Structure formats: structure tokens, C-alpha cells
Image (tube, rainbow, N blue to C red):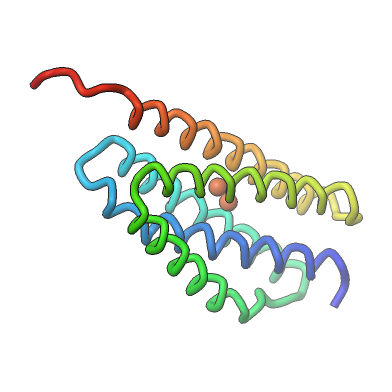
Amino acid sequence: MNEVLRSLGTMYNIERAATAIYKAQVRAFRGTEIADKLRAAIVNEQEHADNLKARIEELGGTAPRMGLLFQMGGMALGFATALLGKMRVLKTDGWVERKAVKDYSGFLQRVDFDEKSAALIQRNIEDEKMHIKNWEESIQILLKPRTGY
Ligand SMILES: [Fe+2]
Ligand SMILES: [Fe+2]
């Protein structure tokens, strides 16, 4: 398998994990605006997984079957952080997203992607940056003292 397909496959696995992490965490925020942000992120990460899979197939490859393992790992991480509390969830999610931006940017630098794949990765990176901002804002929401009813 060439490096382009291998790298797209790795990113696909990471996206499956991200989707599963957020799905496992959303219940911890029931009834809050942070739950809405998590639900939007689930949809967005699923789009990332789907667009990477589609690109892999356009290039004649197949999405890695290890995706299921990453999905299960993500779910475990999501549930574990949810047990540890809302702040732990948001701090972990910020870390996950910053790592994604770093890893994806590294791929863009190292791997000689075709234009279409590079553009797709760049769009995904912009979305992950938005997620970082979302989780930072959510931490501020959590820290804000609640004012009366
Ligand atoms: Fe993503
Ligand atoms: Fe993300």
C-alpha cells in the first residue's frame, strides 16, 4: 500500500475514534448547550471519516478494518472520561483535537498527497481547530458561576 493510502487510512481510524469518544460523552452533558456542541462534533467527525473513506476508495484502496478497534477504543476513552467528570471530558477532548491537528499537519508536510486529498485534509484540520475552540469555550461555560433561576 502506498504512503498516501496508508496516511489517509490512519486519519480515517482517528476520525472513527473521535466520533466514538464524543458519542460516549454526550450523556454527561444532558440538557446543556455543551451537549449540543458535542452532538454537532459527532456529525462533523463522522463526515471526516466518511470523506476520508470516500477518498481512499476513489484512489483504489479500502478503508482499514482496524477502524472498528479505534471506534471501540474511542468509546472506552469517552466513557472513562465521562465518569471522571465534565472538566476531564473537555480537557481530554481539547488534547485529542490538538493532537489531531498536529498529526494531520505532519502528514501534510511529509506525504506527497494529490491536490484533492490535500485539500480534504486541510478542510478537516480547519474543523478540528474549530473543535479546539469549542472545548475551550465549553470549559469557560463550566467555570462560569451559575446565576439564579
Ligand atoms: Fe475530525
Ligand atoms: Fe475534531
